[in-house]
Image (cartoon, rainbow, N blue to C red; front, side, top):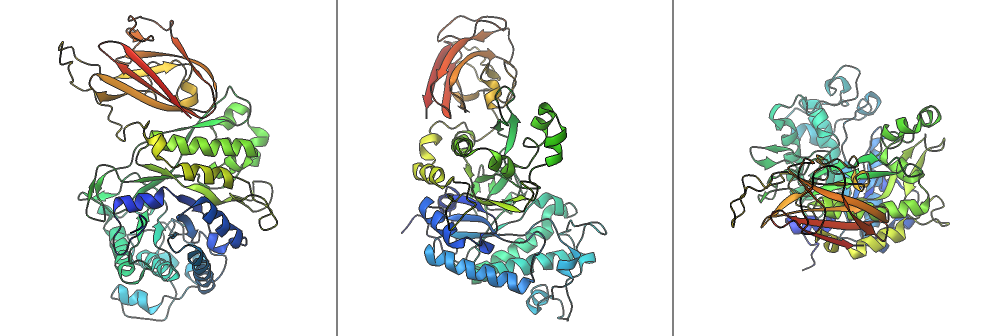
Length: 503
Protein backbone atom coordinates (compact mmCIF):
# COMPACT_ATOMS: atom_id res chain seq x y z
CA UNK A 1 0.00 0.00 0.00
CA UNK A 2 1.40 3.42 -0.95
CA UNK A 3 2.46 5.66 1.93
CA UNK A 4 -0.03 8.34 0.83
CA UNK A 5 -3.03 6.01 0.90
CA UNK A 6 -5.95 6.79 3.19
CA UNK A 7 -9.66 6.07 3.24
CA UNK A 8 -11.86 7.07 6.15
CA UNK A 9 -8.98 7.78 8.52
CA UNK A 10 -5.52 9.33 8.31
CA UNK A 11 -2.75 8.34 10.68
CA UNK A 12 -0.04 10.86 11.50
CA UNK A 13 2.54 9.37 9.15
CA UNK A 14 0.10 9.71 6.26
CA UNK A 15 -0.75 13.29 7.22
CA UNK A 16 2.96 14.10 7.34
CA UNK A 17 3.44 12.50 3.91
CA UNK A 18 1.15 15.23 2.53
CA UNK A 19 2.41 18.10 4.69
CA UNK A 20 6.00 17.32 3.70
CA UNK A 21 4.92 17.87 0.09
CA UNK A 22 2.75 20.93 0.68
CA UNK A 23 2.31 24.18 -1.22
CA UNK A 24 0.29 27.32 -0.78
CA UNK A 25 -1.65 27.26 -4.06
CA UNK A 26 -4.00 30.17 -3.50
CA UNK A 27 -6.99 30.00 -5.85
CA UNK A 28 -5.32 27.51 -8.21
CA UNK A 29 -8.82 26.34 -9.09
CA UNK A 30 -9.37 29.77 -10.66
CA UNK A 31 -5.96 29.94 -12.34
CA UNK A 32 -5.67 31.01 -15.96
CA UNK A 33 -2.41 29.03 -16.20
CA UNK A 34 -3.81 25.80 -14.75
CA UNK A 35 -2.20 23.47 -17.28
CA UNK A 36 1.25 24.86 -16.51
CA UNK A 37 0.49 24.89 -12.80
CA UNK A 38 -0.30 21.17 -12.98
CA UNK A 39 2.97 20.60 -14.82
CA UNK A 40 4.85 22.28 -11.94
CA UNK A 41 2.92 20.25 -9.36
CA UNK A 42 3.87 16.99 -11.07
CA UNK A 43 7.48 18.06 -11.58
CA UNK A 44 8.00 19.02 -7.94
CA UNK A 45 6.02 16.12 -6.46
CA UNK A 46 3.62 18.32 -4.50
CA UNK A 47 0.74 16.41 -2.95
CA UNK A 48 -1.06 18.98 -0.79
CA UNK A 49 -2.32 22.16 -2.44
CA UNK A 50 -3.28 24.57 0.31
CA UNK A 51 -5.75 27.42 -0.23
CA UNK A 52 -6.70 25.91 -3.59
CA UNK A 53 -10.27 27.20 -3.37
CA UNK A 54 -12.19 29.78 -1.41
CA UNK A 55 -13.26 33.39 -1.34
CA UNK A 56 -12.38 36.41 0.70
CA UNK A 57 -14.86 38.60 -1.11
CA UNK A 58 -16.70 36.89 -3.94
CA UNK A 59 -15.84 37.81 -7.54
CA UNK A 60 -18.71 35.82 -9.09
CA UNK A 61 -21.97 34.16 -8.03
CA UNK A 62 -21.46 31.10 -5.88
CA UNK A 63 -22.94 28.62 -8.36
CA UNK A 64 -20.38 29.73 -10.96
CA UNK A 65 -17.61 29.69 -8.35
CA UNK A 66 -18.31 26.10 -7.30
CA UNK A 67 -18.59 24.95 -10.93
CA UNK A 68 -15.12 26.33 -11.64
CA UNK A 69 -13.69 24.74 -8.49
CA UNK A 70 -15.14 21.35 -9.42
CA UNK A 71 -13.88 21.52 -13.01
CA UNK A 72 -10.36 22.47 -11.93
CA UNK A 73 -10.33 19.81 -9.20
CA UNK A 74 -11.25 17.18 -11.77
CA UNK A 75 -8.32 18.26 -13.98
CA UNK A 76 -5.89 18.21 -11.08
CA UNK A 77 -7.06 14.82 -9.84
CA UNK A 78 -6.92 13.40 -13.36
CA UNK A 79 -3.23 14.34 -13.38
CA UNK A 80 -2.60 12.93 -9.88
CA UNK A 81 -5.52 11.44 -7.90
CA UNK A 82 -3.44 11.41 -4.72
CA UNK A 83 -3.40 15.23 -4.40
CA UNK A 84 -5.31 16.83 -1.53
CA UNK A 85 -6.99 20.12 -2.39
CA UNK A 86 -7.62 22.52 0.47
CA UNK A 87 -10.51 24.98 0.58
CA UNK A 88 -10.68 28.08 2.79
CA UNK A 89 -13.37 29.45 5.05
CA UNK A 90 -12.11 32.80 6.25
CA UNK A 91 -12.72 35.38 8.96
CA UNK A 92 -14.51 37.75 6.59
CA UNK A 93 -18.09 38.08 5.36
CA UNK A 94 -19.65 40.74 3.15
CA UNK A 95 -23.25 41.86 2.90
CA UNK A 96 -23.37 41.70 -0.90
CA UNK A 97 -22.15 38.08 -0.84
CA UNK A 98 -24.46 36.73 1.85
CA UNK A 99 -27.59 38.59 0.85
CA UNK A 100 -27.42 37.42 -2.78
CA UNK A 101 -26.86 33.76 -1.86
CA UNK A 102 -29.98 31.64 -1.26
CA UNK A 103 -29.85 29.29 1.72
CA UNK A 104 -30.15 25.77 0.26
CA UNK A 105 -32.59 23.31 1.76
CA UNK A 106 -29.74 21.04 2.89
CA UNK A 107 -28.50 23.75 5.26
CA UNK A 108 -31.86 24.16 6.99
CA UNK A 109 -32.20 20.39 7.22
CA UNK A 110 -28.70 19.92 8.65
CA UNK A 111 -29.49 22.40 11.44
CA UNK A 112 -33.02 21.12 12.06
CA UNK A 113 -34.65 24.37 10.91
CA UNK A 114 -37.79 24.54 8.75
CA UNK A 115 -36.92 25.18 5.13
CA UNK A 116 -37.79 28.64 3.83
CA UNK A 117 -37.03 30.68 0.73
CA UNK A 118 -34.48 33.30 1.77
CA UNK A 119 -30.86 34.36 1.42
CA UNK A 120 -28.24 34.34 4.15
CA UNK A 121 -28.61 37.24 6.58
CA UNK A 122 -25.50 39.34 6.91
CA UNK A 123 -26.73 41.17 10.04
CA UNK A 124 -27.19 37.82 11.79
CA UNK A 125 -23.60 36.75 11.02
CA UNK A 126 -21.29 39.59 12.00
CA UNK A 127 -19.51 40.23 15.27
CA UNK A 128 -20.32 43.97 15.23
CA UNK A 129 -22.88 45.90 13.14
CA UNK A 130 -21.43 46.87 9.76
CA UNK A 131 -18.25 44.87 10.32
CA UNK A 132 -16.85 42.00 8.30
CA UNK A 133 -15.81 39.68 11.12
CA UNK A 134 -18.18 36.71 11.41
CA UNK A 135 -19.25 35.47 14.84
CA UNK A 136 -19.30 31.67 14.91
CA UNK A 137 -21.40 31.67 18.07
CA UNK A 138 -24.33 32.89 15.93
CA UNK A 139 -26.39 30.18 14.17
CA UNK A 140 -26.46 32.09 10.86
CA UNK A 141 -22.65 32.07 10.72
CA UNK A 142 -22.59 28.36 11.49
CA UNK A 143 -24.98 27.82 8.59
CA UNK A 144 -22.81 29.91 6.24
CA UNK A 145 -19.67 27.98 7.21
CA UNK A 146 -21.41 24.61 6.79
CA UNK A 147 -22.87 25.66 3.42
CA UNK A 148 -19.45 26.58 2.08
CA UNK A 149 -17.73 23.50 3.49
CA UNK A 150 -20.30 21.04 2.16
CA UNK A 151 -20.06 22.52 -1.33
CA UNK A 152 -16.25 22.37 -1.35
CA UNK A 153 -16.36 18.72 -0.30
CA UNK A 154 -18.73 18.05 -3.20
CA UNK A 155 -16.21 19.77 -5.50
CA UNK A 156 -13.44 17.36 -4.47
CA UNK A 157 -11.72 19.22 -1.60
CA UNK A 158 -10.48 17.12 1.31
CA UNK A 159 -8.94 19.77 3.56
CA UNK A 160 -9.94 23.12 5.03
CA UNK A 161 -8.00 26.16 6.20
CA UNK A 162 -10.20 27.95 8.70
CA UNK A 163 -8.34 31.28 8.76
CA UNK A 164 -7.80 33.29 11.96
CA UNK A 165 -10.03 31.05 13.99
CA UNK A 166 -9.47 32.75 17.34
CA UNK A 167 -10.92 36.02 16.00
CA UNK A 168 -14.33 34.75 14.93
CA UNK A 169 -14.47 32.41 17.95
CA UNK A 170 -14.06 35.31 20.39
CA UNK A 171 -17.61 34.80 21.73
CA UNK A 172 -17.59 31.03 21.35
CA UNK A 173 -16.97 30.05 24.97
CA UNK A 174 -15.46 26.59 25.10
CA UNK A 175 -15.31 26.52 21.29
CA UNK A 176 -18.60 24.65 21.25
CA UNK A 177 -19.96 26.35 18.11
CA UNK A 178 -16.88 25.89 15.94
CA UNK A 179 -16.55 22.36 17.30
CA UNK A 180 -20.11 21.65 16.19
CA UNK A 181 -19.52 22.96 12.66
CA UNK A 182 -16.26 21.07 12.21
CA UNK A 183 -17.86 17.85 13.40
CA UNK A 184 -20.77 18.35 10.99
CA UNK A 185 -18.32 18.75 8.11
CA UNK A 186 -16.28 15.78 9.27
CA UNK A 187 -19.43 13.67 9.30
CA UNK A 188 -20.40 14.85 5.83
CA UNK A 189 -16.89 14.17 4.60
CA UNK A 190 -16.94 10.68 6.12
CA UNK A 191 -19.90 9.89 3.89
CA UNK A 192 -19.22 11.96 0.78
CA UNK A 193 -15.56 13.08 0.47
CA UNK A 194 -13.34 11.49 -2.18
CA UNK A 195 -11.58 9.32 0.42
CA UNK A 196 -14.15 9.64 3.20
CA UNK A 197 -12.01 11.96 5.27
CA UNK A 198 -11.53 15.74 5.58
CA UNK A 199 -8.85 17.48 7.64
CA UNK A 200 -8.72 20.95 9.20
CA UNK A 201 -6.14 23.56 10.11
CA UNK A 202 -6.31 27.22 11.12
CA UNK A 203 -3.95 29.98 12.17
CA UNK A 204 -3.48 28.60 15.65
CA UNK A 205 -0.83 27.05 17.84
CA UNK A 206 -3.46 25.02 19.67
CA UNK A 207 -7.23 24.55 19.74
CA UNK A 208 -7.79 21.85 22.35
CA UNK A 209 -10.95 21.24 24.38
CA UNK A 210 -11.05 18.62 27.13
CA UNK A 211 -7.76 17.27 25.89
CA UNK A 212 -8.95 16.87 22.28
CA UNK A 213 -7.72 18.95 19.36
CA UNK A 214 -10.39 20.37 17.10
CA UNK A 215 -7.75 20.64 14.35
CA UNK A 216 -5.72 17.94 12.63
CA UNK A 217 -2.64 20.15 12.59
CA UNK A 218 -1.77 23.73 13.40
CA UNK A 219 -0.59 26.37 10.93
CA UNK A 220 0.91 29.85 11.09
CA UNK A 221 2.84 32.33 8.96
CA UNK A 222 6.52 32.85 9.68
CA UNK A 223 7.97 35.41 12.10
CA UNK A 224 10.93 37.53 10.97
CA UNK A 225 13.85 39.52 12.36
CA UNK A 226 15.44 42.18 10.09
CA UNK A 227 19.14 42.11 9.24
CA UNK A 228 20.52 45.64 9.02
CA UNK A 229 24.21 45.16 8.24
CA UNK A 230 23.69 43.66 4.77
CA UNK A 231 22.59 45.55 1.64
CA UNK A 232 18.99 45.16 0.57
CA UNK A 233 15.90 44.12 2.48
CA UNK A 234 17.43 41.18 4.32
CA UNK A 235 15.77 39.25 7.11
CA UNK A 236 15.94 35.97 8.97
CA UNK A 237 13.24 33.74 10.43
CA UNK A 238 12.64 33.30 14.16
CA UNK A 239 10.75 30.52 15.86
CA UNK A 240 7.68 31.76 17.72
CA UNK A 241 5.87 29.36 19.99
CA UNK A 242 5.27 25.70 19.23
CA UNK A 243 2.53 23.40 18.05
CA UNK A 244 0.32 22.31 20.90
CA UNK A 245 -0.48 18.70 21.67
CA UNK A 246 -3.58 16.78 22.61
CA UNK A 247 -5.70 13.91 21.37
CA UNK A 248 -5.88 14.20 17.60
CA UNK A 249 -9.12 13.82 15.65
CA UNK A 250 -7.88 10.27 14.95
CA UNK A 251 -8.03 9.57 18.70
CA UNK A 252 -4.26 9.43 19.22
CA UNK A 253 -2.48 11.49 21.88
CA UNK A 254 0.20 13.68 20.30
CA UNK A 255 2.72 15.61 22.38
CA UNK A 256 2.84 18.13 19.52
CA UNK A 257 0.59 18.10 16.48
CA UNK A 258 2.14 18.66 13.05
CA UNK A 259 2.67 22.29 12.11
CA UNK A 260 2.60 24.01 8.70
CA UNK A 261 4.39 27.30 7.95
CA UNK A 262 3.67 29.57 4.98
CA UNK A 263 4.51 32.93 3.42
CA UNK A 264 1.30 34.83 4.15
CA UNK A 265 -0.35 37.68 2.25
CA UNK A 266 -2.47 40.50 3.64
CA UNK A 267 -2.04 43.63 1.55
CA UNK A 268 1.01 43.55 -0.68
CA UNK A 269 3.81 46.09 -0.68
CA UNK A 270 3.24 49.46 1.00
CA UNK A 271 4.37 52.03 -1.57
CA UNK A 272 3.83 54.94 0.80
CA UNK A 273 6.09 53.36 3.41
CA UNK A 274 8.84 52.78 0.86
CA UNK A 275 8.61 56.37 -0.29
CA UNK A 276 8.52 58.03 3.13
CA UNK A 277 10.08 55.80 5.81
CA UNK A 278 13.73 55.45 6.74
CA UNK A 279 15.52 52.17 6.25
CA UNK A 280 15.32 51.43 9.99
CA UNK A 281 11.58 52.17 10.04
CA UNK A 282 10.98 49.96 7.01
CA UNK A 283 13.01 47.13 8.51
CA UNK A 284 10.61 46.84 11.44
CA UNK A 285 7.47 47.63 9.42
CA UNK A 286 6.11 44.14 8.83
CA UNK A 287 8.38 42.49 6.22
CA UNK A 288 10.29 45.57 5.06
CA UNK A 289 7.09 47.49 4.39
CA UNK A 290 5.02 44.67 2.95
CA UNK A 291 3.46 41.31 3.58
CA UNK A 292 5.49 38.12 3.44
CA UNK A 293 4.89 36.99 -0.13
CA UNK A 294 5.32 40.47 -1.60
CA UNK A 295 8.67 40.81 0.20
CA UNK A 296 9.71 37.44 -1.20
CA UNK A 297 8.54 38.26 -4.73
CA UNK A 298 10.32 41.63 -4.67
CA UNK A 299 13.74 39.99 -4.19
CA UNK A 300 15.75 39.12 -7.30
CA UNK A 301 15.56 35.58 -8.66
CA UNK A 302 18.80 34.37 -7.08
CA UNK A 303 17.80 35.78 -3.68
CA UNK A 304 14.37 34.12 -3.92
CA UNK A 305 15.95 30.74 -4.65
CA UNK A 306 18.40 31.17 -1.79
CA UNK A 307 15.64 32.19 0.65
CA UNK A 308 13.48 29.25 -0.42
CA UNK A 309 16.34 26.89 0.43
CA UNK A 310 16.92 28.79 3.68
CA UNK A 311 13.25 28.50 4.66
CA UNK A 312 13.12 24.77 3.97
CA UNK A 313 16.24 24.04 6.03
CA UNK A 314 15.20 26.49 8.76
CA UNK A 315 11.86 24.69 9.15
CA UNK A 316 13.53 21.27 9.30
CA UNK A 317 15.92 22.17 12.13
CA UNK A 318 13.83 24.64 14.14
CA UNK A 319 10.62 22.65 14.38
CA UNK A 320 10.84 18.87 13.99
CA UNK A 321 7.04 18.80 13.86
CA UNK A 322 6.97 21.53 11.20
CA UNK A 323 6.69 21.63 7.42
CA UNK A 324 6.89 24.41 4.85
CA UNK A 325 4.13 25.09 2.33
CA UNK A 326 6.05 26.19 -0.78
CA UNK A 327 4.51 29.29 -2.44
CA UNK A 328 3.09 27.79 -5.62
CA UNK A 329 0.59 30.65 -6.07
CA UNK A 330 -0.06 33.63 -3.80
CA UNK A 331 -1.71 36.99 -4.33
CA UNK A 332 0.55 40.05 -4.31
CA UNK A 333 -2.11 42.74 -4.29
CA UNK A 334 -2.28 45.86 -6.43
CA UNK A 335 0.44 47.64 -4.49
CA UNK A 336 3.19 45.38 -5.82
CA UNK A 337 3.60 47.27 -9.10
CA UNK A 338 0.32 49.11 -9.56
CA UNK A 339 -1.69 46.19 -10.87
CA UNK A 340 -3.19 43.04 -9.42
CA UNK A 341 -0.56 40.32 -9.63
CA UNK A 342 0.03 36.78 -8.44
CA UNK A 343 3.31 35.21 -7.39
CA UNK A 344 3.79 31.94 -9.27
CA UNK A 345 6.52 29.39 -8.60
CA UNK A 346 6.51 28.51 -12.32
CA UNK A 347 9.42 29.18 -14.63
CA UNK A 348 8.59 31.91 -17.11
CA UNK A 349 7.31 30.61 -20.46
CA UNK A 350 4.63 31.21 -23.07
CA UNK A 351 2.34 29.09 -20.90
CA UNK A 352 3.11 31.23 -17.83
CA UNK A 353 4.58 34.58 -18.89
CA UNK A 354 4.63 36.02 -15.35
CA UNK A 355 6.29 33.13 -13.52
CA UNK A 356 8.88 33.97 -10.84
CA UNK A 357 11.09 30.92 -11.62
CA UNK A 358 11.50 28.97 -8.37
CA UNK A 359 10.16 25.62 -9.60
CA UNK A 360 13.63 24.03 -10.08
CA UNK A 361 14.75 25.02 -6.57
CA UNK A 362 11.51 23.72 -5.07
CA UNK A 363 11.78 20.44 -6.99
CA UNK A 364 15.35 19.87 -5.77
CA UNK A 365 14.45 20.60 -2.14
CA UNK A 366 11.39 18.35 -2.22
CA UNK A 367 13.38 15.53 -3.77
CA UNK A 368 16.01 15.87 -1.02
CA UNK A 369 13.32 15.89 1.67
CA UNK A 370 13.41 16.81 5.34
CA UNK A 371 15.09 13.72 6.83
CA UNK A 372 18.69 14.80 6.24
CA UNK A 373 18.16 18.08 8.11
CA UNK A 374 15.94 16.60 10.83
CA UNK A 375 19.05 14.86 12.14
CA UNK A 376 20.20 18.32 13.29
CA UNK A 377 16.80 19.47 14.55
CA UNK A 378 16.33 21.19 17.88
CA UNK A 379 13.85 19.50 20.24
CA UNK A 380 10.19 20.16 19.59
CA UNK A 381 9.54 21.48 23.10
CA UNK A 382 10.49 24.98 24.17
CA UNK A 383 10.92 23.78 27.74
CA UNK A 384 14.69 23.75 27.71
CA UNK A 385 15.18 21.25 30.50
CA UNK A 386 18.18 21.08 32.77
CA UNK A 387 15.92 21.78 35.75
CA UNK A 388 16.97 20.27 39.08
CA UNK A 389 19.44 17.98 37.30
CA UNK A 390 22.64 16.99 39.13
CA UNK A 391 25.79 15.52 37.65
CA UNK A 392 25.70 11.85 38.71
CA UNK A 393 29.45 11.66 39.43
CA UNK A 394 29.96 14.86 41.42
CA UNK A 395 26.49 15.87 42.50
CA UNK A 396 27.02 19.34 41.00
CA UNK A 397 23.78 21.02 39.97
CA UNK A 398 23.67 21.59 36.20
CA UNK A 399 22.66 25.05 34.96
CA UNK A 400 19.06 25.50 33.87
CA UNK A 401 20.01 28.20 31.37
CA UNK A 402 22.94 27.98 28.97
CA UNK A 403 23.19 30.52 26.14
CA UNK A 404 25.25 30.48 22.96
CA UNK A 405 26.20 34.06 22.09
CA UNK A 406 28.46 36.02 19.75
CA UNK A 407 28.64 37.79 16.40
CA UNK A 408 26.47 35.15 14.69
CA UNK A 409 23.37 36.05 16.73
CA UNK A 410 21.80 38.70 14.43
CA UNK A 411 21.73 36.11 11.63
CA UNK A 412 19.52 33.82 13.70
CA UNK A 413 17.21 36.54 15.00
CA UNK A 414 18.92 37.65 18.21
CA UNK A 415 20.95 40.67 19.37
CA UNK A 416 24.71 40.33 18.86
CA UNK A 417 26.68 39.23 21.92
CA UNK A 418 23.58 38.82 24.09
CA UNK A 419 24.58 36.26 26.70
CA UNK A 420 21.04 36.16 28.10
CA UNK A 421 19.16 35.62 24.83
CA UNK A 422 16.22 33.22 24.73
CA UNK A 423 16.60 32.90 20.95
CA UNK A 424 19.99 31.21 21.25
CA UNK A 425 19.37 29.39 24.50
CA UNK A 426 20.74 25.86 24.31
CA UNK A 427 18.59 22.77 24.92
CA UNK A 428 19.50 20.26 27.60
CA UNK A 429 19.72 16.91 25.78
CA UNK A 430 20.80 14.69 28.69
CA UNK A 431 24.07 13.24 29.95
CA UNK A 432 25.22 16.69 31.03
CA UNK A 433 25.06 18.03 27.46
CA UNK A 434 23.43 21.10 25.91
CA UNK A 435 22.96 21.66 22.18
CA UNK A 436 21.66 24.22 19.70
CA UNK A 437 21.23 24.00 15.95
CA UNK A 438 20.86 27.10 13.80
CA UNK A 439 20.98 28.04 10.15
CA UNK A 440 23.38 30.73 8.97
CA UNK A 441 22.27 32.36 5.72
CA UNK A 442 25.68 33.87 4.96
CA UNK A 443 29.14 32.37 4.65
CA UNK A 444 31.83 33.97 6.82
CA UNK A 445 33.73 33.88 10.09
CA UNK A 446 31.82 34.27 13.34
CA UNK A 447 32.80 34.30 17.00
CA UNK A 448 30.99 32.65 19.89
CA UNK A 449 31.02 31.98 23.60
CA UNK A 450 28.82 29.92 25.91
CA UNK A 451 27.39 31.60 29.00
CA UNK A 452 26.34 29.28 31.79
CA UNK A 453 23.33 30.42 33.79
CA UNK A 454 22.80 33.12 31.15
CA UNK A 455 25.40 35.52 32.55
CA UNK A 456 28.88 36.70 31.61
CA UNK A 457 30.35 35.65 34.95
CA UNK A 458 31.12 32.06 33.90
CA UNK A 459 31.68 31.58 30.16
CA UNK A 460 33.42 29.03 27.99
CA UNK A 461 34.58 29.33 24.39
CA UNK A 462 37.28 26.69 23.82
CA UNK A 463 36.91 22.93 23.76
CA UNK A 464 37.81 21.82 27.29
CA UNK A 465 38.97 25.36 28.10
CA UNK A 466 38.93 27.27 31.34
CA UNK A 467 36.04 29.41 32.55
CA UNK A 468 36.38 33.12 31.85
CA UNK A 469 34.44 36.20 32.89
CA UNK A 470 33.49 39.17 30.72
CA UNK A 471 32.58 39.82 27.12
CA UNK A 472 35.95 39.16 25.49
CA UNK A 473 37.91 36.06 24.58
CA UNK A 474 35.43 34.37 22.29
CA UNK A 475 36.40 31.61 19.86
CA UNK A 476 35.70 31.59 16.12
CA UNK A 477 34.17 29.28 13.57
CA UNK A 478 34.04 29.62 9.79
CA UNK A 479 31.03 28.86 7.60
CA UNK A 480 32.17 28.12 4.04
CA UNK A 481 28.80 28.43 2.26
CA UNK A 482 25.49 30.27 2.54
CA UNK A 483 22.58 28.43 4.18
CA UNK A 484 24.67 26.06 6.28
CA UNK A 485 23.36 24.32 9.37
CA UNK A 486 25.56 24.65 12.45
CA UNK A 487 25.11 22.51 15.54
CA UNK A 488 27.11 23.25 18.72
CA UNK A 489 27.10 20.81 21.64
CA UNK A 490 28.45 21.72 25.08
CA UNK A 491 29.18 19.42 28.04
CA UNK A 492 29.00 21.38 31.29
CA UNK A 493 31.28 19.39 33.60
CA UNK A 494 34.17 19.02 31.11
CA UNK A 495 33.62 22.20 29.01
CA UNK A 496 33.80 20.01 25.90
CA UNK A 497 32.55 21.81 22.79
CA UNK A 498 31.69 20.13 19.51
CA UNK A 499 30.89 22.04 16.31
CA UNK A 500 29.19 20.27 13.39
CA UNK A 501 28.14 21.73 10.03
CA UNK A 502 26.23 20.54 7.01
CA UNK A 503 24.87 22.10 3.83
